Length: 555
Image 1 (cartoon, rainbow, N blue to C red):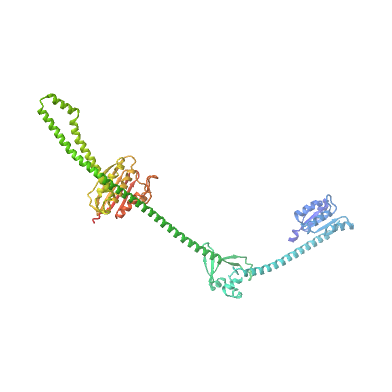
Image 2 (cartoon, helix red, strand yellow):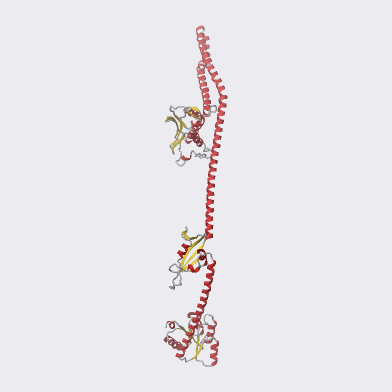
């Protein structure tokens, strides 16, 4: 049989003939065997192969059979193995010693083959019975444990808030915990053998797929459940379920998530509101700074106007005196020159003494009277020209600031440009040649002082854009109800990534400390106040053209 073929027997004997005889006998009955020649080797082999029976001789070298039997029975790993002692000694004391050592049986040599095989089979049957008994005890304990576990499981399942449903292959409910009866309003018997999907639908359950991909069920009573299913092996019986459905109660978590989402949404809105308020504050602050800078600029221009008025008042009178006196002096010099010429001609006619005439001539020559008379006219003309230039500069300064005029009035744009060029001429003359191409333009109602400020800022920037020597071209023309003022330079140009920002307050391409970034911003605002526009065209390395466009306003 399969069991007998698997039986292992350890034969222990120090005589080779006995080992061969016993091995042949054991093999004849289909048992597996191994051999050992003394007690020490028997212990080692036993632990190694775990035999079902040991046939042990007593008289052996190194360690006899009684000592080996004693040690095997003392060892928890080997004490269960039946030991049959085989010996030629027939005295009673040897038998008693063997039994005391733990031997299970005793046979005297020569051994009767039939008796030996019978006793081996008996021990194997006893061993099988013990194993069956042991397995029965284990099975009984397992069944009891299962029953206890079942009761504990049911008690536990009835105490939790999660839904647990056992279903068969047809999705019919064969077991569930109490929470399902409470949520559906049906008794346990009413739920059994019904499809769980139908029960959920009738009870108002709804479901959706969450963002994580899991299925979430919602009960009208405000409970949330996370759905999951576990498939188990179908044993083929009617009562065996094929799957366990668990619906984990996530109501608290869902409420926390909803609360967190609401909080995050409120925080997001608050953040957006704060950012909007912050941007408004930044915008208001920028506008305030720009307005403050414009006020400072206006105050500066007003100060310039006051200074111009003071200069005009203080300088105009002495310049008037100088020009009046120079005019009178010019007349006096002309008369004196005429008198000296008449006097000289009269002396020549009346004097008969050549020596006197020669002395006068030499004196006139040595004193350079003729040169002085000729140069006096040039000096007076140059002085008058200088005084006239001083007068014009004062007038241009007054015209530029317009401190003595109303804020808005009819004005000549070309005249304003001319006065502005005169004011900033010292900034331009070392850097550029200024070309003027003025068109015939009508008067327009404007604030001349503010427009002059626009022209001044663009002209100064043009001069700064020219590194060594270049050209600035001023053009004006009138077209379709608008006045156009074009100011072009041959400077470094403006990079494409910055040209859209040049009118922003405080933006500047100049080095730190060489510009506030407000000049063009203020100029843009002034032009916008005149309902006009500024157009910029620039190419790096070739130059920039600013074109100011303002409407013609007749009244």
